[in-house]
Image 1 (spheres, rainbow, N blue to C red):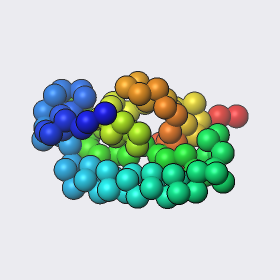
Image 2: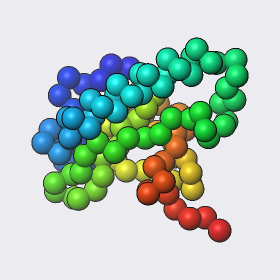
Image 3: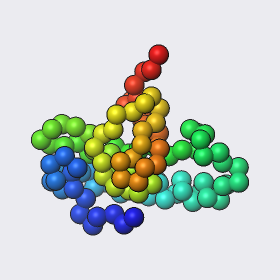
Image 4: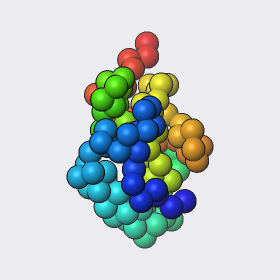
Length: 108
């Protein structure tokens, strides 16, 4: 899936809410992780959270003050997701990815 040339906030549609430097860094890191995982594919269990990539926080909406996330699989910009503990499902591509530890809910 190709990334939109001008990333826009999923809440208000403004391009100024997205931190271009954070998005660029996240996309480069995602590419490197993908290359590593493909190279080591025979040794990787898809359900192992240690090898599952994480969503990246790439901005904050200036109107709603909600966080903007980027999917490590399809690279689409999405609203902050409700997690089920450690993971969340991307609404665009349907893949599960890890949630940053600071954004996880404690499930007892």
